[in-house]
Structures are given as structure tokens and as C-alpha cells.
Amino acid sequence: MSELKNFYTIDDAISMDYETTKELQLKHLNRERTLAGNSKYFVKAEDCWFTDYEGNRHLDMIGAVGVVTVGNNNEYIWSEISKVFESKQYMMGAIAYHNVAAAFAHNMAVLSPGGKLTKMGTATGGAEAVEGTIKLIKLACRNDPKRAKILACQGGFHGKTTGAVSVGGKEKWRMYQHPLMECVDHVPYGDAEALEQALKDECYMAFYLEPIQGEGGIIVPPEGYLTKVRELCTKYHTYMVADEIQCGCARTGKMWAVDHENVVPDCLTFAKGFSGGLIPFGGYICTEELYEAAYGSIETCFHHTATYQENGISAAAGLASLQYILDNHLIEAAAEKGEYFISELKKIQEKYPKIIKEVRGKGLMIGMEFYEVPDGYKEGFGEYFADPVNDALIDQYHIQVNHTINNPAVFRFLPPLTIKKEDIDYTLECFEKAVKMCEEHCK
Image 1 (tube, rainbow, N blue to C red):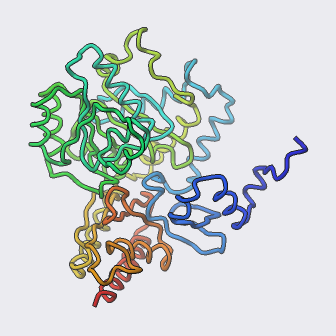
Image 2 (image 1 turned 60 degrees about the horizontal axis):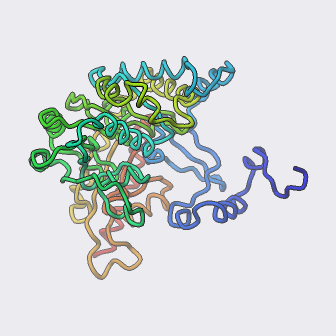
Image 3 (image 1 turned 90 degrees about the vertical axis):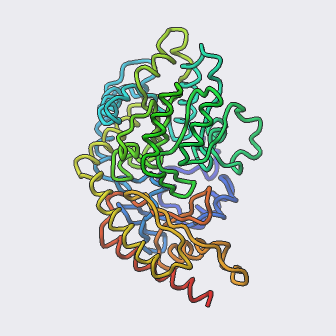
């Protein structure tokens, strides 16, 4: 290996300067996405704060889009993962019993809605988790040829793999990926009447929905909608699949967003916050009835496998994250801090009704929808007021936020649940300054 030039070690990578990092990333990774995004270079991340290569501190109010539930580089999570590593156990769960994976699956069953989702499948992220549920549903319905289609929601987002974008409700992400799954129809989100009409007209295997739409613009459905969905899915023999990848893991002030209406879906996907942002991890939990219908025979039990399924290190991160959330009362914290944050944002909205259209959310899953910038003021400012407010928070005030990708009029706050009140207050102060700047620009 001595003939290899510029072959980096871990020590080299950790100490790499900004210019070298930028050069290598633009050369070897997704150049256009990097340049189009928030191209900061952070050299340290602790709890809710980043430090960039120039020594500036930045407040994390997006949590890697809901991943960093327990704060960046949580020391407790690292220490718990280290215990499993130091045990020198066999880590790959696919061909042997694995105590850590089994313990995590048990804890997820205990914390599942109503304690009724007792079977689990694991993945390395959200899109893979959704793909796993599609196969689960198809196998469960394999003996019923009338149930051959999936129903999902307009504006929904379930990932960018082929199956996940087929279920997703945004044509933008389906472009250039055809042929997609042809067995998917979509109905308006939050409209129980439209759902019932669709279920009356055709037999569906499953109905996919986010209990709160994330990328669609932090859309909270009408009260009672989830309850009605459960009733209709039961009535029409359709599996209810709740995608909680963004809204789960205590984010909304409940362990699961469906818990706000005490609804028990047949299947629920998870990812993002379940490993402290440290290890790729995700999966689904479902009822024993559904799981057994799909995989309860030697004929079908090997129809879904994955290289890192039931991995011990991933499961350790999941166990530790759940324990930290419970021990530090982060479910209650998300509810309390979110209520305060949303109420204060609504006060700002009332002061600037021509800039901010709506503030919405639950817990610490919060979206602000902005009006379109009037003609004559858009040059250098953007189509929606969300653009300059977003840019000001990032560039002027060093607060990390981002847009919802299915609705450019909305940007969101998804901070770590460990966020302090004084950091929320600082964000509110800077947010109002950015909104005021928009108002003055258009006078």
C-alpha cells in the first residue's frame, strides 16, 4: 500500500482543513447538492451548538431534520454504545440470537401505541424502513388478489428510494425514476371523506400517512382525523401504516404522533431520532397478526433480509436513546417547550400578518408558512418570504434552519429536544428581526 498517494487516515481526516475538505467533497460527493445547500464547515457539535472552522458558534434549530433528538454527540449515547463494543459480542444479528437487538425490540413493543405493535423489522434509515413495510404488506396480502394497491396522501413524503417515492405524494421526486410502482393512488391529506370514498371504490392493501406531514409543510391534520382513519381502515380491511420517521420519537410531545388520538396503527415506521444521530438506524414495528401473515411461514420468512438488520451497535444506540429520552423526561419537555415556542411565534405572526401566513405544529415540530413576495420585490429576495427569513437566520444570526422540501413557502424548527428556553428566546428574537426586515424591504 506504500505506493498509494494522498491516502487519508482517521487522524488526517479529523485534522483536515476547510479548503481540503471542500475540494474533496466537491470532487467526490454530490457537488450540486453541496453548493445548493447550507455549505458550512462545522468542526464541533455539542448538544444544541455547532462551532465552525473559524470559531463561530451556531445554534442548531433543525437537528439534522429531526435526527438529533437527544442533542449532538450525546455523551450518554456514546458511552452506552461503547459498552456493547467493549463486550466483543458478535454484532450481526441476521444469523444468530442477539441480546441487544432483542432487548431493543422488546422496549419498542412496550413503548408502541397501546403496547400492541410487538413485532419489529430493522433498517439503516427511513426510506429502507418504508421499503420494508411495502414488502411486508404485499406478502401479507399475497393470497388476496383483490387487494393489490396501496393508498397514500398527496403531499406526503416517505423517502427517495423507488418504492418510497411511489408512495410519496410529490411528483417532483418521482421524475426520472419511472417506471415506478403502479399500484399506488393518492388522496388529499386530512380529508376523511375522500379517504372513505377511495376505500369504497377499490380494495387497497394499505393506507400510508404521516400523522403530521413533515416535508409537506408541517401539516397537522384536523382533530379526529387519525381516529377516523383507523375506523375506516378497519371497516374496509385495509392496513393502516403510520410513517413516524420525522414526527415520532417524542418529537411532538408524545412518544408517537398517533398517541395524540390514542390510535393504534397496524404498522409504524421509525428512524431519525432513534440512534442519537450517531448510527444509521431505522425500521418498523407492527402487529403480530400482520407480521405473521407476511413472514409466519418457512416459505416467506427469508423474503426480506438486509446486510445490517438487527445490528448490535445500531440496537445499542436505539436502546440508549430511548433510555435517555425517558430518564430526562424529553417527551414532557417537547410538549412544554413546544407550547411556549409556538405561542410566541404566533404573537410574532400577529404583528406581521402580511409576511407570515400561519404558524403550526405540535411539540418541537414547528412550521411557519409565509406569503409570496409581492411582484417587484422578488429579485434577490426569493419567491416566498420564507427564503430571506431562512437566509438571515443562517447567515446573519448563525441559527440553523431549513425549508420543507415539498412546500417552499414553509420553513421549520426541529431542534434537539434538549434545547434550552434561553436558546428558544434567542431564536424568537432573531426570527422577529428577520421578519421585520422583510416588512421594511417591501414598503
